[in-house]
Image (cartoon, rainbow, N blue to C red; front, side, top):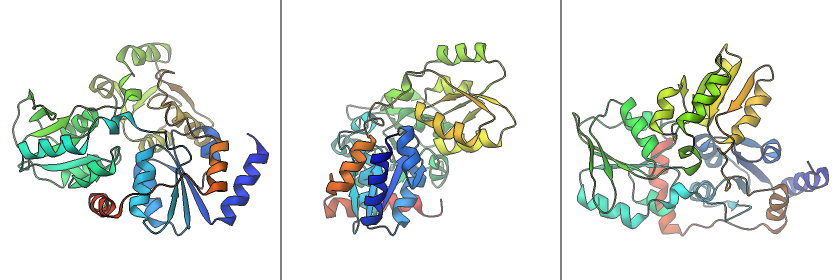
Amino acid sequence: MNMAIVEKINHLRRERDAVILAHYYQRAEIQDLADFVGDSLALSRTAAGTRAKVIVFCGVDFMAETAAILCPDRIVLHPDPSSGCPMADMCSARELRELKARVPDAKVICYVNSSAEVKAESDICCTSSNAAAIMARFGNDVPLIFVPDRWLGEYTARKAGRTNLRWANASGGDMKEEGSGAPVYLWSGYCPTHHHILPEFVERMKAEHPSAMVAVHPECRREITAMADFVGSTAQILEYCQASPATEFIIGTEIGILHPLRVANPGKTFYIATPIAECPNMKLITLEKLLWALEDCAPRVIVEPKLAAAARIPISRMLQRI
């Protein structure tokens, strides 16, 4: 780590009254420097509750955008605006409006990995930490639309006992699995990083480390979550590994999680399911870009007030009582 850059960052964050927030998938040096490291839910809560004048968000664009929506009176900086989310790009507000017109009785649960425009078209947001609790707020007789992650949506629906599942997109939903209760329409988006974790990768690691427990993220394919000893968000994976008496773990999520796992559990061994599980967008933010953001107080994330007000409603509903 370049200590000269670190010293400048520490000086500027005090001078600007800035808080640095980082996701678990960020580079290790960014996590080490952050005031708070967490998953999407924890980061949303922290952003909503901070009193700092400046929020520097080290994550992908929808995360910084969410912070700007929750904190319209603060300066929100995103050190690299090109750090986007392919999953979020898989669902547009226009497409969601078309689906809502086809199933007007359905309530929309929107994963936070989405744009402000999509959030504004939704009834409530969720994260991978609280998706099951959010879905449980609705009775089985209420039709649901879940966007944009097909795998999180399917995993959550099954966990909630919802068996009437359908693929849903703007061109028409094809019946996937007919069951009892109102249908859950699953958008066909996915996280490329988690989607590329294949069963053969996990099988190979289990053969090499037969005593290791398998902990994976619900953005993984159905075949992967079925193979796991534990399925949860990044924060929940951390909690599980700390509490478990096991000493070896195979981790099925983005490789950045290995850093906090190893720091928190020096006596345990962690293996990534596959080294290709790396999000290139999450790794775009560097110490230099963090420094430049604090020096220039830019790039600043600004969400148009009317859009922010509409998007704030489903985000706030998510944060209530969860």
